[in-house]
Structures are given as structure tokens and as C-alpha cells.
Length: 147
Image 1 (cartoon, rainbow, N blue to C red):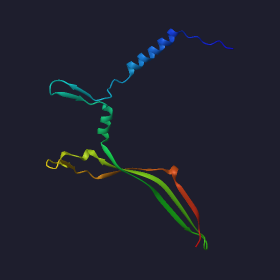
Image 2: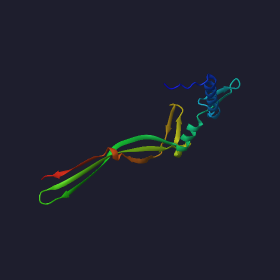
Image 3: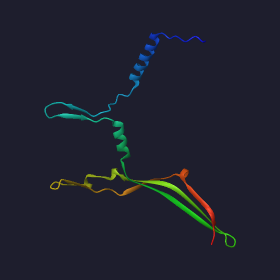
Image 4: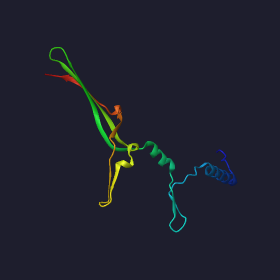
């Protein structure tokens, strides 16, 4: 039987505290909530957080409004000798996303009807995103067509 390794408790505790301390020092310090500070009778200061998320949304500035899932279908036929004809069909699934470019919105596109308490927004034209084909899920048929 092999001798078990004995590690003093002080070494285990010390290494655990050292790892915790290093993790605390190198961890990001950005806040993960909204902080509201009251600085008087009617003065409140709201600090928004998750700035990385907000900034990425501002940079992207697109709103996905529709996703089409369909397939691209391609077929071909051949005339063979005498009465033997052939046909092939390929069916490849695809996804297309449609977006609104929010950079095109201005205050002129927004109207507010005070009496009806209604906000109307004129939206820009839809933009077609990339077409994502899924060739791993394709369906293929080939055969002989008889008259």
C-alpha cells in the first residue's frame, strides 16, 4: 500500500485565501445593476450599468423583426435514350433574417397625439440579413422517371 500524501492544513488554507485574493483583485469592477442615488428633496441621479451591453446595442443598432425559415429547392431532369428519363432534386434548408436599421430613425419619424395619448413612429424599410444555408440538413432525391 502506498503512503498517502499529507498536506498541512495551513498550506491548504493559505493557498485557498491566496487564490481568492488574486481573483478579487483581477475581477472586473463594473456594476451589474442600476444605481439610484437620492441627492436632495427632488434630485435623483440614476447611473446605468452594464455599459458593455448598452454600448454593443448602440453599435449594432439593428432590430430583428422577422425570421423566414424555408428551403432552396433545385431540380433538374435529363432526357435519356428511348423512354428512360432521369430527375434529381436537391432541397437545402435556409434561414433569412429581416432587420430594421435603427440608425435611420430621427425625431421627425415620431409623432405624439396628446389628446389620444398615442405615439406614432414611421419605421424605415426592412433590410434583408445574410442568408444562412444549412447544407448538413439537405434532402436529395434521384431516380428514373418513367413515361
